[in-house]
Image (cartoon, rainbow, N blue to C red):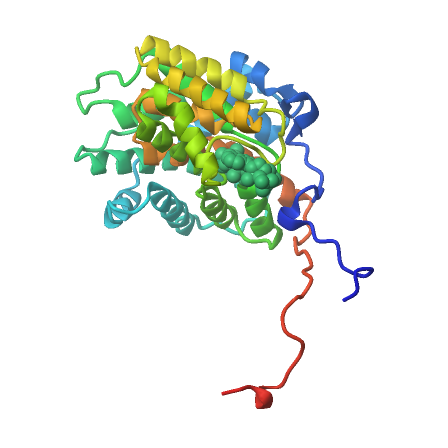
Length: 382
Ligand code: COA
């Protein structure tokens, strides 16, 4: 092929506008992000995770009555499913927790007789079903690996508090977390809830575009989110911080990794090149958690790593950088950070599945072939 008719390849689809979306807008030039027109910082300060989920799924913030209905619909699925409990227990404790989540979504899909109902309301019910059941599967997985029994869900609690209770509560019913911890956790869920056409959301949209069901779309999205270049980064941030251990050694560690041409997880972004709009809100929550839990060592680590990265590369942190140590302070085992991200992002995935479903076109790009010229088996050297 001559240079003149060399096709233009958009590697990684970078810079490609794949479709319209009314769910959220990422504005890298002003470092801002809106969900249905509302700045994410405004939502973090003034809304619950359930209100944000309602907004993403329905386009407007709920009235008190709409919120009550939304909560009742979601909480009606909060019953321990013995089949799900057995499915989680059947999986090896050595597997990655994201594999348990992926299997749980797939399992839950097999229980839905209305799977192929071509209807947006049904897709939102799938969102409710998974938002109720996945925190249970994750809490159960955390606890079984620690040799602890299961804690039943509480239909009177919000998503954040119920999740923390199922993970950290005691079977005698003592409180799992104080209100400020619950609020910090809820804020992280709001910040992780949605982010336009990221890799996992796009995966969900591709699967939906084939007219497959929402469980299949979310199973695929979980697989995409697991990768360290996407959701898996929050775990790697904490693994790095734990490995460095002493904040005074952070700069040397960062520089050694950069010398070795390694990626430093929790930094950089495909869309934001001058900083991630979600970082200031998460950093505020993280600093507050560290102060209240007397774990300011992680703040020092955060600052030293960030300073060293900035001095050497100018690359800014993304949401995973403050979220990783915040989840550590809350007490979550590190390899469960990405499953938490799944629970939060169910809000955005569901909104995008509905949007794709309502205005569908099969997603099927073209490729430029660069393999061998056509040839005959008879000529093969065999
Ligand atoms: N650590 C070290 N170098 C980094 C980096 C990081 N976290 N992020 C980007 N870079 C470097 C790249 O290696 C590249 O260097 P080069 O020009 O010498 O090849 C340069 O910065 C440009 O980066 P680019 O690969 O164009 O960015 P991208 O848009 O393709 O990738 C990410 C974006 C998110 C995949 C990338 O920044 C990354 O891998 N970050 C770490 C994983 C992470 O935190 N993911 C969560 C995202 S929310």
